[in-house]
Amino acid sequence: MSKLSVKLRKNTGIWVGGTVLALLLLVAVLAGVIAPFDPYEADLVNILSRPSSTHLAGTDGFGRDIFSRVLFGLRLSLEAAFLVTVATGVCGILIGCLAAYYSKFDNLIMRVMDGMMAFPDIVLALALVAVFRPSLKGVVVALLISYTPRVARIVRGSALQVKTCDFVTAAIAIGARDSRIITRHILPNVAAEIIVQLTYIFAYAILGEAVLSFLGAGPPPPIPSLGNILSATRDFIFTDWWLSIFPGVVIMLAVLSVNLLGDGLRDVLDPKLSER
Amino acid sequence: MELIPGDLATTLLGARATQERLEKVRQQLHLDEPLPSRYFQYLTGLVQGDLGDSIPLGRPVAEVVGHKFTVTVVIALSAFLVSVLLGIPLGLIAGVKHMSMYDRAVMVIATLGLSIPAFWMGLNLIIIFSIWLKWLPSGGFVPFSESFVGAIRHLLLPAATLGFLSTAEIARMTRAKTLEVIREDYVRTARAKGLREIAIIGKHVFRNIAVLLMTVLGMRLGRLLAGAVVTEQVFRVPGLGMLIISSLEKRDYLTVQGVLLVMGATFMVLNLLVDLSYAYLDPRIKYD
Image (cartoon, rainbow over all chains, first blue to last red; front, side):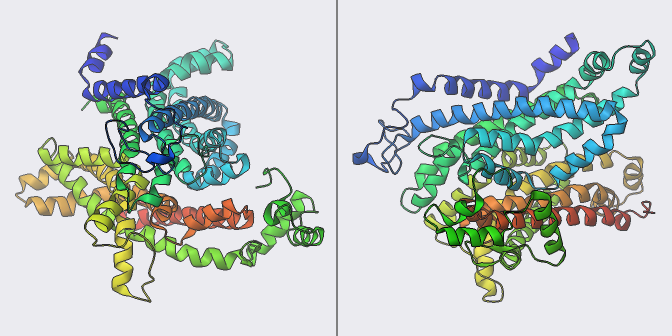
C-alpha cells in the first residue's frame, strides 16, 4: 500500500488532472453562487455584446450572459457524465462478469455486445435519442447503451484472466457461492482496470453529451448545455466569432483534466506499464 | 424505431393530415401489420436493395442514402489520409526519440487532440482560415467531377477537423508500439551491424508495427465515418451526417434506419478488411 501511495504522490498527471477537475466540479456545484446573471435572463438591449467587465464572455443572440450559461452548462455536462459513468460501470461490470464466469452465456452476451459495437457511438446515440426526444435523460440512456459494450468487453477480458488463478479455483473447490467468488475474488482483482476505464468513460461522456447537444439531441434551449451554447454560436460566427471561445475552452479543460487523471491512474495502477 | 411513441403516420404528416392520407401512409409503411411481419418484409426488401421510401423526401431511401454516402466517404477518407500521413511519422519520431523534446511535444499534441471537441476545432478553423485569413471557404461541398481545385479547397477544413483527433490517436498508438518494438533484440542487432537509423526504422521497426497498427487504423476509419456526422454539421456538408440529423428532425425514421444500416455494414466490412490484411502484412499469420 505504501508503494502505491508513493506512486500516487509522484504522478504529475494525477495531481494536475485531479486539481483542475476538482476546481471545475467546485465551480459547477457553486454555479448558482458564482454566476453573475440568471442563465435564462434575456437582455434584448445587449444582444451579441463583446466580452466586457460586466459580461465576461459576452452575450448571446438573446442577450443572455454567456459566462453564466457556461457555468450552468458545465454543471449539466458533469452531471450527465457522472450518471453515464456510474450506469455504464454497473451495467458493464455486471455483463462482463456474467459473460466471463458463466461460459455458456459468454458467446450470446458477447455477440450482442459486438452487434451494439458495430454501430458508431454517436450515430447509435443519435438514433436512440429519437426514442426519448431531446432531453438529458435521452442523452444519458443513449450514451449508456453506446458505452456499455466497451466496458463489458474490458471487464470480461480481465475477469477471464483472473478466473484461471489458483485462488478462484480454490474458492470453487471449497464450495463458495458464485456471487461470493465474483464479488470477493474476481472483482477486487480487476478493480484497477475498471477504475482506469471508467475515468476514460467519464471523459468520453463529457464529449458525448456536448456532441449530442451540439447536434440538437440534448436538453433543448433555453436549458444551458455546453453543446447547445456552441451550436448557437455557429449562426453568428462571421460577425461574433468570440462567442464560441469560452464554452469550447471549458469543455476542453474538463476533458483534458479527466484524460490526464486517467493516464496518471493507468500508470500507477496498471502493473504492466509500471514495470518500465 | 418501434419504441418511438405515437402513431408514425401522424408524426410524419402532422396533426392536420387528412384521414385518407394517414391511411395511405399507414398502408405504405405496413403499420397495420404485426412487427415480425413488418421486419420480414423489410429484410426481403433489403436483400433486393429496397430500403423503403422516404415520405418527407418523396424518394427511395436507398437512392438518398447512396448519394449522401459518397460525400461522407470522401470526407472520411480525406481525414484518414491526413491522420495517417501526420500521425504515423509523429508517432515514429516520438518513439525513436523517447523522452526527448520531440517526444514530449508529440504527447502534448496527442493529449490535446483527444481533449479538444471536433466541432469546436472546426469552428476555430473557420474563424482562422475563413474569417480572418479568408483563404478557405467556411462550408459546403464541391464534387471532384465539378472542380478538382474547388473540391480540395472545400475538403481541407473538414478533413483537418476530423483528422486532428485521429492524428492524435494514431500518433499515440504508433509511439507506444514503436517503444515496444525498438527494445527488441533484432533492432539492437541491426544497430550493432552498423545499419543507418533510417533503414532500421523503415525495415525493422515499421514493418513490425504495421500489423499492430492495422487494427487501430481500421477502427479509426470506421470512427471517422461516425465523426463525419458532427463535422458535416459544422461545415454544412450534405452527407450522411446532415441527412440523419434532418431525418430525425422530420421524424423520417425509414431514412434513419437506412443510414444506420449503411454505417453499421460499412463498419463491419472495414473490420473484415482489417482482419484479412493481417495475413498480407505478416506472412506468419494464416487463416484456415
